[in-house]
Length: 125
Image (cartoon, rainbow, N blue to C red):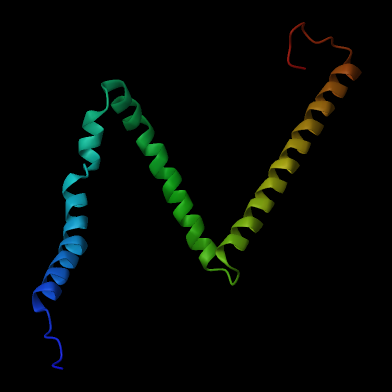
């Protein structure tokens, strides 16, 4: 019995279909997806105005985030451990600041009581 001949037509169709899927799919997505500018122009004017106002703040936040990542990457620890340690120190600093402010308020109240001055009604002290 003779060996079956190779079906080159079938293999060429399979290769062509693979190329169409691998190249044509991403090309179609690239062609159909709108750019950031096109999306921005589709906003209503109020959203465009608000987006322009918030753009600078978001850019500064992103730059701050990237700078922190650069600092964390210089550490011997993994980035997530360095970030956790930094967050912990910041949290402790905020707590210490709150304690200091509370003590300052209590000290001022004690001074006012000692001096005999009555605080104004509705005042913050």
